[in-house]
Image (cartoon, rainbow, N blue to C red; front, side, top):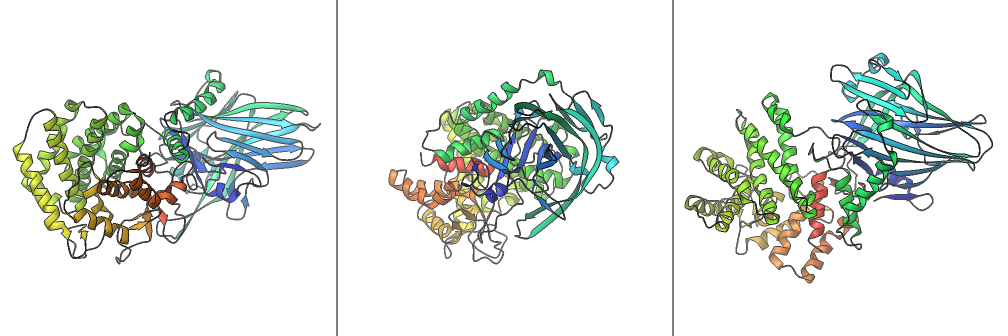
Length: 606
């Protein structure tokens, strides 16, 4: 986890690192390490993908001198806290500032777990004779009103209370932000901060710039006496709440307990794995199950019932997310012995599969749904390795496999190597389970032979030592999907093909920080590399060489730089996308699938 101390660390790194944590239910916090909201989806408080609070301004007025602590950039100027910040600890959500010889303060962030309230603790030390006028100014936004210019539109039904204010940002969508404090009084105001700038580098390595206007609806104000130390709290929620019901000591102690619990079974020497473990825990959203921040969907029974109302583009996006969620089950849950959580995920995924399968789908959506079905079987097999409750899953697996081998499906579903490899793997998983319970299935045994021959005879191109990515494409080139023939629960190819595939992957796809999706020689190669595929690459290598300390050491050297990169770009994790030219890609924030796959990778060496 990133830590900063003045004159020891580089402040610019804090401004680049991704810093995220959640209440493990519905809301999250997502900024840079210095609390700078650099990207359009960054913000200090996010609910269902809508940023309710973009940032805070803290001001100290004493003896005619004003100190302003803020991280924000407008079209005309940039304000930062570089000269004031002395210490950051992103594991403890702790920040320390020194404004002068006489004035210093700390702040800590923590969520009430699963209750949707963000608690901010301030401890202010004033060793001067004079009193300080201290203000906390919330900068409010609502991303659905991204281009809004009218201040009144951001003040729907502002209702001031004795301890803060309740602001209904959208009456229609019932999106609210509630701001309260235990010791500070709320002073209403009516201002706008115009043209706040967000600059990022997208996946095409091009700079994108966004602007938005922020509302200043008021500020919290208090006086800090001279020669005193004051502790006070500011609370933020998306619903009304009673301050008296919040136990601040319990909230912050729970944060420390969760961090300790995340690494309880991790050896002290595995520093990177400790960071990855804390990172997964602090951004885990069991009720939402989305692989990146900000969280877009809540995949629960209510969502399942609404699937038929989704547009084709919405459904496609959700299926992509659910595929990632399903693939992350092992690294996010199973390796931490969270069997119950993993089972909840696959049960939800299966409900989605059944509802989507009832719809009239385009060919693209059918392919997505079929991919989800087969990744579901792979995830189920991982669960069964930990807990053998076969009866919970055998019927669903059988239904999926029998549906996919129907003539009309078999003729159209298996034109890609990913689908073909996943299908052969699913067949082997199912037959293996039947062996456990002393049964056989002759029809599926024939399918195993069919798909093995399909892969080795139709997809394999001996002259180039690669698997075709798609049977319909005339171009033949190395692609990352061919790794699935080696890295799933059951390998799909035999003889000398695995060695030749790995040789091609190493020569054309491998970099120390991730794999290219397609050959560097292919005309459509875009310069992007992806760490998430490293676990598949190393698993394939270890399968061929056998797991010995020598083979583990050789494999570790292939990914050493990536593992050492943990925490440099994401607080306790790794970036989803790297650029081979060294450009940092900003268009995706924290990505649970990538983090889970790096956890899986790490476990191969311990």
